[in-house]
Length: 94
Image (cartoon, rainbow, N blue to C red):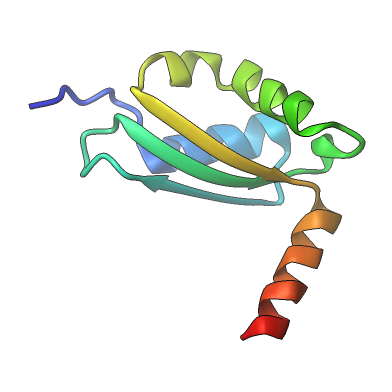
């Protein structure tokens, strides 16, 4: 059985909102509750003008301590404008 990292979706969400000034965050624990595998969607104005790699580095730098305690981490990052455009596209397809 995997050890619990002490990291939860809720604590990750709070940290992301605080450190990245995120306007939208969705964190999902895909580890079955042991706190080892997380994926997130992050929308932040701090991503404006940054490449995908730069956004990823910004997230990983700000979550360095948390990421070190878990097994797997993946995230999708959007600026507020990119997020609105994505939501509009999804609404049009529904």
